[in-house]
Length: 222
Image 1 (tube, rainbow, N blue to C red):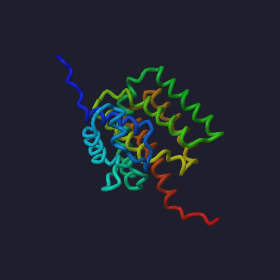
Image 2: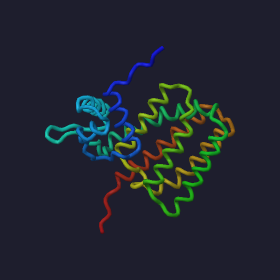
Image 3: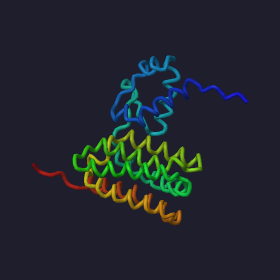
Image 4: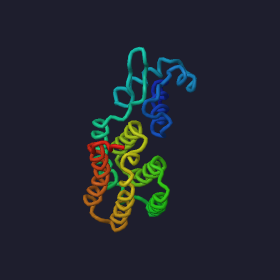
C-alpha cells in the first residue's frame, strides 16, 4: 500500500514545530515567511497555512503589519500548559514504566548524575536541555501513541513559551534532581503504576508552583 505524500503545508508545519522544539525559534522571534519558504524550497502559501495552524495552537501570534512571532512568556498560558502536561506526561511515564529497557533507565540515571554535577556551575538553559532529554527517555516508551503525541506537543509548546523555567527559580534545580532519582527508584522497584503516575505528575506541578510563587514575590529594591 502506497504511503500518502506529505503536503507542503504539513512539511512546513513539521519543520517549524521542530525548530520550536529545538529552541531555534525563541519567544519573540519574528517568522519571515519568505525565508522559511526558501529553506523548504516552496511558495509562501503552505508556510502561511502552517503558521496559521501554529497560531491556532497558541505557539505563535499574528498581527497585521507585523507578521508572525513566536509566542512570548505568558504566565497563564504556561500555567495551563504545565497543568495539562503534568496529567498527560504522568500517564505516559506510568504506562512506559513497565516496558522501559534497563539500558534506558541506566541512561536516565547517568543523565541525572550529569545534571547534579552541573549544579556547581549552573547554566539554566543547559540544565533545561538535559531535563528535557531526561523526561523524554522516560515517557518515549509510552505504548499509547495518542498520549505520546499529546506529551510531545506539550513539551514543544512549553519550550516555545520559555527558554528555561530555571532562570526564574534556579533553586528548583536541586529539588528536581532529587525528584528524578525518586522517580527512577519507583520505576526500578516496579512500584504500582498509580504511584509512578502521581510522582511524575507532582514533579511537574512542583516546578509550576515554584515558578508561580516566584512570580508573586515583590521585586527587590536595589
